[in-house]
Image (cartoon, rainbow, N blue to C red; front, side, top):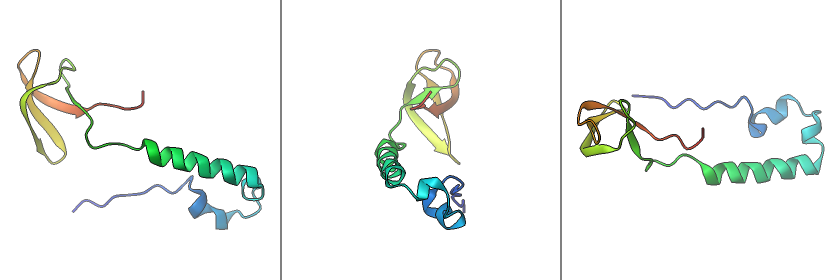
Length: 92
């Protein structure tokens, strides 16, 4: 069973009590800015319906793609070779 690990190092929600005198916790402008940035961050998010591209020539798959232990594999749409596939990156 795989356990999801959440990094809270930069989380104001989790770190505020450790440093209550920090300026970002004293000024309403910073708190409002944080709240706006947090909403934008939640709205962007990663989507599970990202396209798959081959690792050999970055082509789309030909036919069905199979998944095993989080790895995707199948036939490449350009070179017709059996290869691995990775999900597209949304951010460069």
